[in-house]
Length: 311
Image (spheres, rainbow, N blue to C red):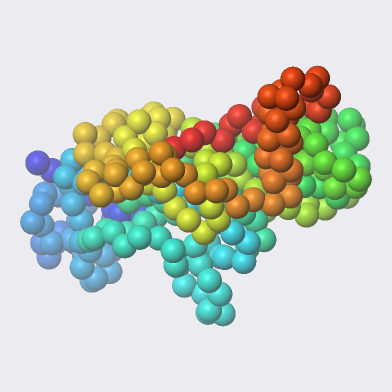
């Protein structure tokens, strides 16, 4: 049983497969003491080193593919280590034996919502690569008036400092006064892209919550600062988006599976603010009105609410 060297290195999370090919071609990788070549195959038991440092690895079929979802709160940074000693999104993740979590995309320190982590570096790189056009969906609270002309401009595209950008979809979610909520979708993960798109039209984003990444939706039951592990069906849906073959050893087992099943049976109360708290209140009041036999005069919760699936 063997596997191509650049594929192994990419899966570990050291970079894309193309970048790993460049690292190998530069003579920085050795296998069993010999300088490696691009396309060389590696087997269990081989000694792998990069720049002289030993790297632990497993062949793909031996590794259980795992994916976590994490509800990032404001104030945490998307980095393993911070010189300023600020809290990071890795602080709350479970330990993973002989492996490590690779973050899929980023959120800035003031943004909240869905983050994905996986132990499959190749899956992470494919989900982030612009060529795969994986959708990222956000609930955004904007200060200022979004006119029909501004909305159309943002759908058609504007030129930012790092090139053209646009929203794939743009819909209104509600709100009062100068603060209104919108649901937007982008297919790239550029730094502060959503905020910069609105800023290009003289508007300010006061809240930003990522609600979906690809086929994974932020569960309503998940509280800020908490994580859940995905089971095989959800992971296979993700890998299908980026044309990776399913792996038999995938998803939840043992205690992790039982913990997720218990959470589905008795979920924790969601801890949300702003628009999402109001939508939950609106939904409850609408249901109470219907149960009392009175005519429902409230506007029903938008379809966005339906997107939060139970786990």
